[in-house]
Image (cartoon, rainbow, N blue to C red):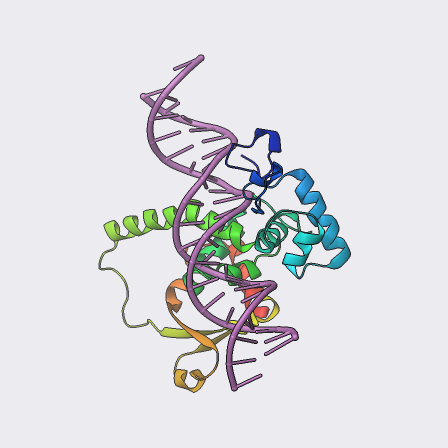
Length: 213
DNA sequence: AAGCCATACAACCGCCCCTTA
DNA sequence: CTAAGGGGCGGTTGTATGGCT
């Protein structure tokens, strides 16, 4: 596995442009250490913007998007890779319940984690876990859910306010007042989200942090 | 030891929104 | 105001790796 491969080990379809090909085809596939180094150097000098220009200056035969992805997901400083903790996993599960597949928003709440990593983690680990859990629940408690106390909250996620200010507006009545603004309405079961009945005190730390933010 | 299959994850693609000229 | 290009995002694919038979 691993993100990096020596160009010499690339398959014939990969690293096309490393041959002195006549056509201006962009390089695709795994990044080499050399490419990473060049990209990092140029970004250190010019900053992480204008990706097409960065690719050109670095002499990388890559599209700007590819450079951006590589930088954001792997080369950028303070990136955490792998070893997603139980708390992080729990947070991902809850945030996904709340936000759906809004990976960038979810990643915004997990310092050092990228949307791509969370998305991958979800697809390979958590989605299966959830399906399994749902099966178990269906098998055991098909009709045991309490009805009366459930409040159906709607949450507005302000689209433009990612990163620092992706605050959520809890609103259980005057929803339509916000309809003109740039928002997305999400329905979720607040009872499920805040059901800590079978959790230790440790798991509560993140939620207080989350609310504080 | 070899082949097959499942899993994990890096990277690409396409759509859409935002910015800029 | 508008069109074009750039960038962000989620979905999907491709491939390396590890486990099992």
